[in-house]
Image (cartoon, rainbow, N blue to C red; front, side, top):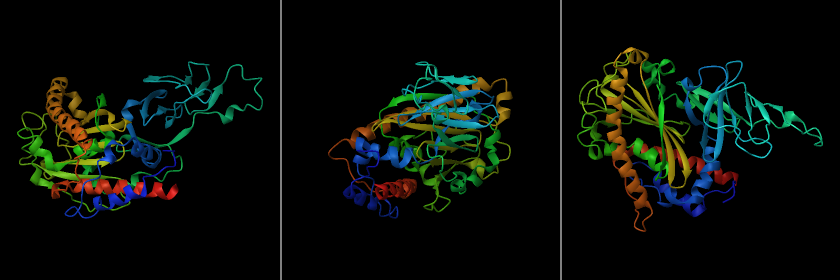
Length: 391
């Protein structure tokens, strides 16, 4: 498909049955999770137009700090410039398209290793050796393409469209559930990345926000947060960019570990109600985010192909947690608990993706505990339709 291509009208029509009331809705057609052509459409309809979460602000605390991330083949630099502002731009040199940097670091400029074109922290082209004989060459026209940037709850979001509408007003439904976590001042001690996971990015999103499997697939390890205590506390509207649910606990201060109890310090402002639930939220197309009484957790999902993704995983704690001399030991204990869930989910999503390639892959029906999936479908179909209208 070309960059302006859209889903075929026949496939768009099939999606209508996936966005009706959950009691009547059918799951999405299997090709939505397996087709390279569908991902080509999503590159333009979603990843080139929506707000992409790239990480936490703690990753670039100082002037000159930078890191790179690649989302759907777009290398992105995120940096803090000399004025202390967070900026994002393409990492593609405007000479011969080499990626000017990779990984993370601190510096005053970005020098492309290939021919030493040198760029400022704000993306301006500062120097281009031996270009004095090139006709009508104007350095001001060859800066690194800039992207829109917004910080929400301590997360950095980037939009390839510099004129994109603001993100925060579309996330207000979820903000009351986060207010007592003070996430802007919370601490993420680091992340780790799982690469080349063998399933479609939408399978990942659906699994993360699926209350139906909570204490079925995760029997015993998640019995304190059972499927039948799933709630969808806010009616979803078409102008919202967040899809979330709550999962109630059988006791206060539950924890996703072998003890079923919070290990780290509980966020001190939480109410008793907030201490007896988790929330699970999607901010598509890249952020999966969850809360528990003593921690928050996030997955940054990056498609690498129609059936493969990379996932960056991180935890967020109240600052007092890091003051505990036993923090590193508690972190290992908490992480071991999470890894049990991750391993079970990886097995399930691998086999779901395998099943989606079968000629017998179904258009299934949803349980009431899967209301989030229908809301996610609605978010997607809006954007598929908009892309069709542009084509």
